[in-house]
Length: 118
Image (tube, rainbow, N blue to C red):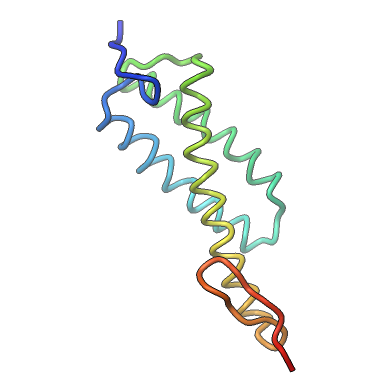
């Protein structure tokens, strides 16, 4: 049986960071970039993160003796992955808007764009 490490992770902090943040977060970041580059909607990003959170939950279960069907820890993993994927999508979407449509838009910070003033 596994030990209870707290509300945010059921495995050790290192295992949580390795699987959820580094491995799952890297996949979430790349998915956000792919969604932005293909001009897909945020709903598709959410769907992919739901699937990715299932895979992350399985890795916790298979490698580190975590609970496979734990709604609370699934939601924690999903929240982390959704946050990273959403930031990635917004970052790359703003770069696309400012780069591809530079005649109409200009970049504003890392995550925004605005119409060019004549």
